[in-house]
Image 1 (spheres, rainbow, N blue to C red):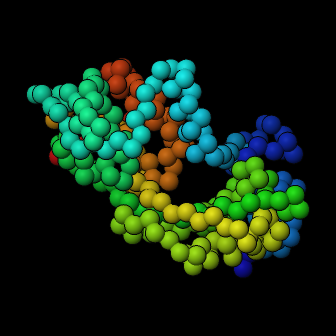
Image 2: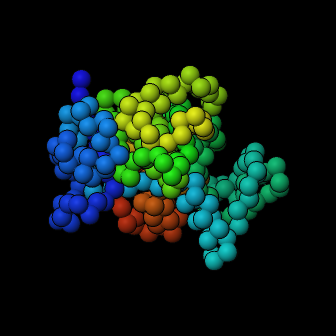
Length: 275
């Protein structure tokens, strides 16, 4: 059975007037990414998304944090556990942590999969559930024929992208509570599918396995807004596996809410509901 692909990241092959989604024949697939040539006969076709992109979320976040700390005077408190909240009337006055009391005028709740436990103290019930996801990252050497364009194998639900001298592949999601444990067998399916596409794509003998928890909502939409119990707590939650993708837009919405101005993006349908 032949597969359908989604491939992205801008290419100079197609005219700039084409954007969003473009159906491709098998010939065009390998013109956009020659590394798929050895698997060409497996394709039924592809959808090309020239305005899509991929990147290293961890690197982006680290660099953003450094910029905020050095250029904007932001203080980051790592390895700090919030144990309780100090309140007065309808306002939170401080977060009580294992490193002391931290006072503030406005508080943003962005605790990922752990948010529901904490949010009940704020009078908010959150439909956020931990969904376990897996990825594997492999080094790319000079002789490897790695992908130059990120893509998704729809039949196998495997996504891949190149980050410099590394290739990352992700697939599989499951309900596993708060466990982040994993074993090599958990990655068999995604590695088999990737080898079929890119037999010489990376060093498959040096896999770096990872598993983490995604804060998913039933409809896949994030949650913003203020609860009714405390007027100075703003939610920024439930982004699932699209956290980095939606981070900039979410930050704009939350910043506007903290400033108590009309959000630049309409959050209708994504506002928190009080208990």
